[in-house]
Length: 187
Image (tube, rainbow, N blue to C red; front, top):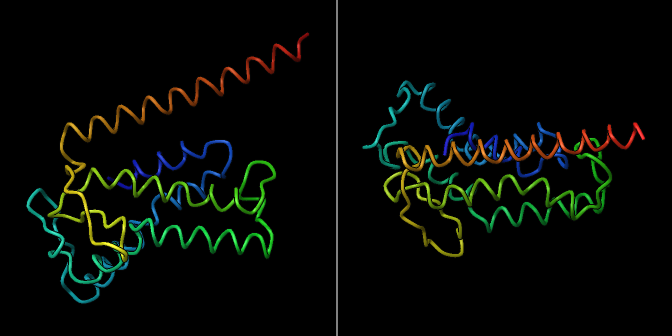
């Protein structure tokens, strides 16, 4: 899935609970932590950027992206991140400025890691075995699903349609709340 879609899914799933910039970053970090360092390394070493098309294989990207991908796209490692965040917030306090309203440590950690989890769940069926299949059970198991590349028109347009639907519902509900608040205030 492209980072823009992940960004909008992460914003939508936490809308009104987690600040947009935190949700956005947590939803794209699984890919940014893999591909930004890889691109920088390839550029500095003179190798240049890998052209990605339907024939590109995971191995074409070099050793680092696949190793990092096994960490950033694993629900096992993500769960560890959630638990450490929960522990940190319970011990040090929640950064309330990252959230809309007061939240406890567990809820804060859950909301922070929810966009990351959604990223992994979306990638599982939208990545083919030939190009970054999602190692969602790493390091416990190397089981992966041979999905359909997200760039396939049926997957791509379904994603766009679902994003449009989700954001239409979000904006409609927010408008309903505003209208209700205005009518309550005019009584």
